[in-house]
Image 1 (cartoon, helix red, strand yellow):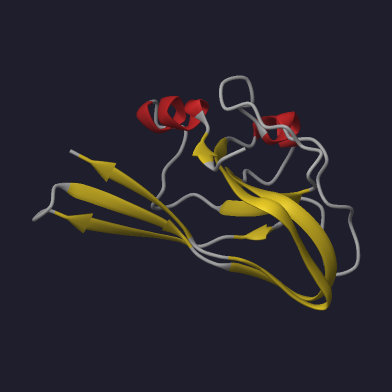
Image 2 (spheres, one colour):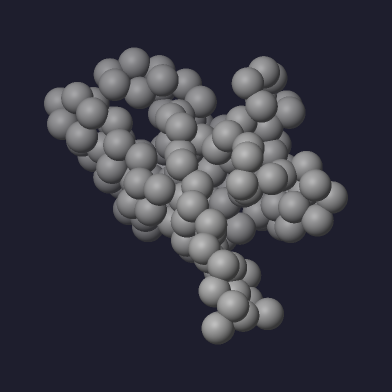
Length: 139
């Protein structure tokens, strides 16, 4: 499975449900058992097989800062979701899901993107790092 942007993200962005400049975003980790569906999965509650709580990982993942960069010379906007680290952790994960966190039920949190590493990444009493992810909107 390759990394992708959930189709619902574009709809949520167009309708104003997601404000990349002011909303809070998180990244959660899943095992290889999660089969993402870019069309049908729209909320965090659609995501299955999240990494188990404990060993340096908390259910729901961790905050993920967003940086916006408008490039008028090249007619584009770059959206960067910063690197997220889980220090002192023992984690095995294959995928990460970036989502807008509303702070309540998983049924309210809008999905943004799936980052697929193509194989399991393992940390053992160390730091598990999800590298920065970039979405470019080109005109």
